[in-house]
Amino acid sequence: MEQELHEDKLTEIVIDLNTAESGQLNESFLRMFGYWTKKILGAMFDGSPIPIQVKGTTSQVDSFAAALGREKRYMQAISDYGLDDPRTYKERGRLNAAVSSFERRTGLKWPFL
Image (cartoon, rainbow, N blue to C red; front, side):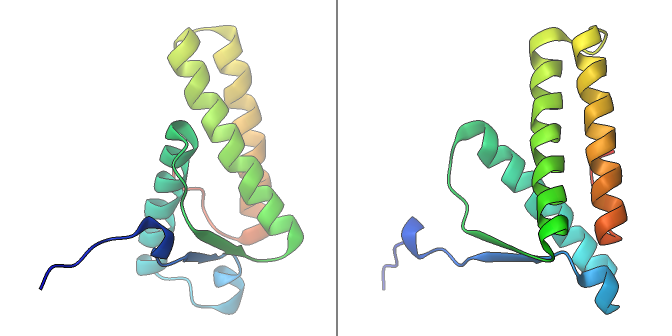
């Protein structure tokens, strides 16, 4: 029997940023979190949709979005200007600030630093 994959019927990915507070933080969650964050960043660069739901407080979700956006800008700066350019250093500083905010608000480690 032949099966087809339909993008509009992909299962939604759910990331719960309250995992650390609920005591359910384990290696499996951290691996999944890193994997899906990497996939989201890839989709941000190529424009492909990913069905995703991020759960948490408003400040947790906002800090996750900010860290993702800063990660993308930093990666783009590396691509555009190289590692030694002052603009890249500036983006790295902004990324570090966003990551610190994310980690304080969620209790999760950012998977890419």
